[in-house]
Image 1: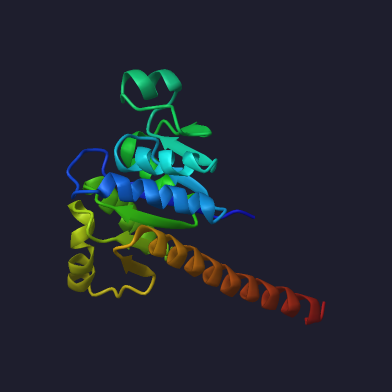
Image 2: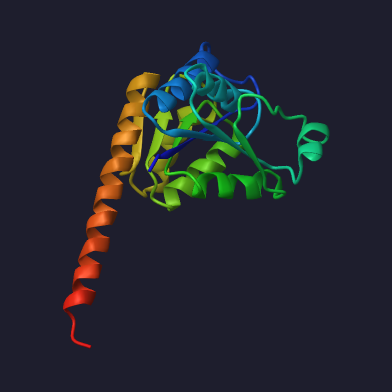
Length: 197
């Protein structure tokens, strides 16, 4: 089974120098690691990640805030290229963010604004592995401070400044989390099989 790794980041150019190139490298490495890229089907960081994935023939899924292709293009002014599948959620941005995060095995945050923080908090509450690419500017630079002030710990949050290293760490964390879940499921099945009827 292939892992689904979401790249979350700014659709606007409020990022630090080289952030789009790093996003391209993240998307490319996700595909090279055999995972599926998931994005919010938008411009900026997500689009560059999709371009990176497609540069090595990776598979890319976009979850759109729109309810149809027509709305995706005309109302939201979003691209259709560099994605193999676009799911038209019809839930605007906030609803799309929830589905985007919940449908992914892990999230990688690059640059970002409020929507990126929204996706971060959803993934954090769901205890999903979250990679934060520091040095890309925007809201992600504030995540260490936000977690410190919130006093909720940062167990599943992985920081790095190198795109390739970060992707590898995130995929390793997903594998470890899945192994733990599989062991728990196996124990439950064993208990069911040994309990009297």
